[in-house]
Length: 228
Image 1 (cartoon, one colour):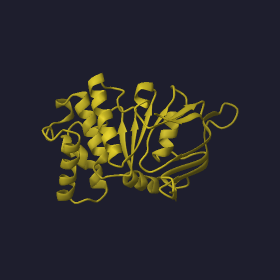
Image 2 (cartoon, rainbow, N blue to C red):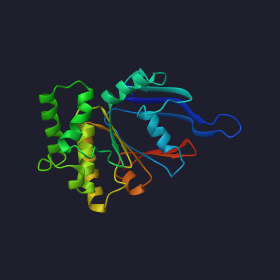
Image 3 (cartoon, rainbow, N blue to C red):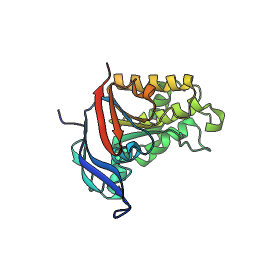
């Protein structure tokens, strides 16, 4: 089976020259369709840079990145934007919701850019909100919801278009323990239903709930193991 994600000898260098910072240093990695992987590392380890590469938010200095069989490492900004919109659902620590839109409006927003007509995107958004248990909050704006509910809206937005990859950057970083458990249970359920889940975290407890843990340090993969 072809890997969904294949990274070959990837490097990312900032400030090339005497004061260069090698954020990624020869990283090679494969993630198969349907995996639930956690990428863990301390601040400055390179995990956020690796997330930006996997999410097509930045381009490597050198190396190759194949996503779903396509070489995306040399794509321009417009091409990368299309890949992001079609292939990856993002969940961020800060929710990134639009304050003056209700829950269903926030979920619909990326569907507009995909060219989905209003009727279909409304139905798709309602279904996504039902999946995360917010069928009773569809008309609520972010300020009218708890942090956990806002993050569930963000999850619904990420999964609405059924992208093959869910990329979650510290998805529980701003949440209490109860909301953290809710979000992790949603991610586990998505994984059981066949989604590929990649969580970026510094929290060993969060990483322990994934099926695979990839540890990064000083821009290099230090360990790559399966959880029992």
